Image 1 (tube, rainbow, N blue to C red):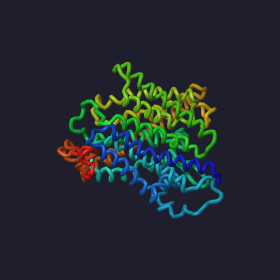
Image 2: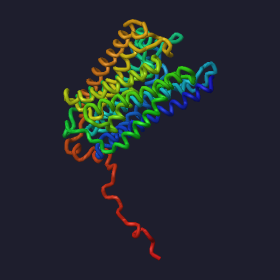
Image 3: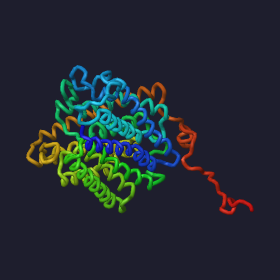
Image 4: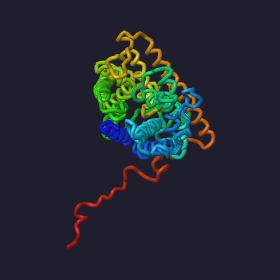
Length: 426
């Protein structure tokens, strides 16, 4: 067993775990002060529930031997409860338990991303029920398609093996999957009270802090997916860095040209958009290709976030415009910028590879978008017709934090004692 690679994946897992509080702060700062606790609790709660499901059957459904060798879903009972993975395997390159927890955190982050579509208007209990069902019916199957590779007497997912699409760390299974699921959930939920006005984040510094933590965590997400502390992880680390910086600059440029100013919210969103786009491509392109993908993602996603006003869906935290569109941009641009000099070893159109890879990437993207949207819409619709998804309008206006959690993020009646009042009498 390689202790260096084990140490790297342990570190990467901790970095991916950092993305959950980072996302909670990023989302929390973007909503009003009466919604921040609920928004953060949705992130932590959804990720926590999925972690439990992952141990019971999620890992098995994702990385187990494909049922019927169809490449659609792993056997949910093969590693049920993970009781069989505790013993040390001296022939393994990495501890299996470590790989399991690394992928567990991917599942948690993906589920938490979807929460942004329900900001301030979804029952907390309904969200947890939705998150559990969504993970079981959408994330686990799609992750099997994309992440489960064939092994000794084991059949993996159809996108990874039969189609041969490139997705180094989850542009399809994570970001496009979560983004289009957010769209379906937002459509079923309907618009918030007062929707359509300008977005007014209650705490922009929190947004920047959250974005910064996500950026750091993304190194574990992307470079950790190399599963070794070698050249592949180093190339991915470099590509992730320069793409993020280019994305911030691309969004800032559009902001400046269209609105006359560069906003902190735009800078944070451009950073995240590029990180989303480079996630599938980080092992397939050169640093210059990474800069191009990051810049294109920042520009395209900046324009895409305004679709919600044109099409009329309530996505106030821009999960669709950033994650669905950013994931799609990165997945498709692999077909242009991929080079066989990079760890994935494939050439795209600009490197003499023709259009075959672009077609493969488009098919993978289309399959994930279609499946995730349809199944998510059905899950949300059934729950809405049975238990109901929305909180009462009065509670939404008063603030979901009090309704759902009986708490306020900020005490309006803080202790106003002066320093003199606090000095003890002689």
